Length: 543
Image (cartoon, helix red, strand yellow):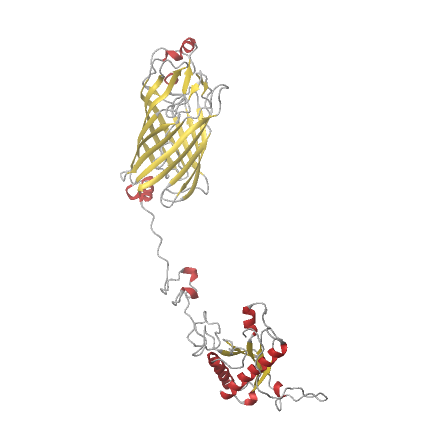
């Protein structure tokens, strides 16, 4: 006999009727492979990790109906399929008690209320299957793992060990029992989100007696389950359930496929305030096993006495999680918690919740002031004045600009030089400054040297006319001999065309002469050119 698969029906065994009729009867087995769980928050066939609360109890019936859980098809296909068990209505009466919030134990008494099928003569027995039969009594247990015990209303990971032990109380001839003691240890791992959504995984081992039925081994199996619970109306206790559960056959005959009975089930649940949990739904079998039904339906009514710890736990689960308290912001500046470096005084976010300071009182706060110790003045920018002393220099904010190839100062640079004069005026300790003229590398050395001298002299005249004493300023041209940037680029040349103001150190006694006033060295002829009318500048690029 050879198994056959279809997409929506169980695995149909290929069977020769004449051969089967003369063969010895096969050992029958417990057809009900999917066994429900009796705790109110378990996912019907898939267990969740949380045990019942201490000394709380739950009890109630679980009804299940399956269509065509066991069918055979003749090998030649001339005859229709034979439904050995065409339908089954089963009642599981369950009760569970919680212990110490860490464990629970329960009992399940299955009872086949009604089942029917065609004549069993094809498997060596006259007449249909017995319609009413007792199943195998099952004891259940669950123990939460340390560090992974979660409360009913809590969220996060949870895990538990489970154990099922079935006693041979069922009628084996009615496919309602295995005829021997069976046991099944398992592991549960799940996660509850803050929204109330639960994801659960089950796995384990089911020790069963070896049963060969129509050439198919129905012995030891590895049960599995994946389930979820999604709150639809959490405050009202209405949730959606979904699960895939089944078992993988660990033994198989050489010429037969491996048995993997499995079902996809979907249901609705209502945790009522009276302590009764109603669950109903249905699903499809995968058609990949002898014992997988075409269709199945289920409903359960699990009762938890009101005002018990378990009832209170379920009621807390139904309450939506409270929103987190608003962050504490005593100064009302919208900078919260550790980010607020000044929690009692309001300040901008950019300054860590602290008030902005302005050390130089120039109206530019220190965190934006590039010169926090020097007032910017009326014409300053970014907190810096147009001119200020830094070390042995008077630093200017903008370059001094001249007419092209001339020593004529452009009017746009007047405010900068006026600010230099002001710095000299308010700092009488600045004994004398040297005005340095510098150029880029274009044109000859002699041309650039002469141009830089004339430009430095023009700046000197401007400062003297602005009120600076003549003995406090000197000028000197350096041409292109002291670049500060690469002359290979326009940007570099622009930086090299500059005027610098170097503060001369004070001296005791008379001041030394300015560089342009120094007499020629002894023994050498003065080769300085005589004053003459300006000559036209040689052709050169713009400076």
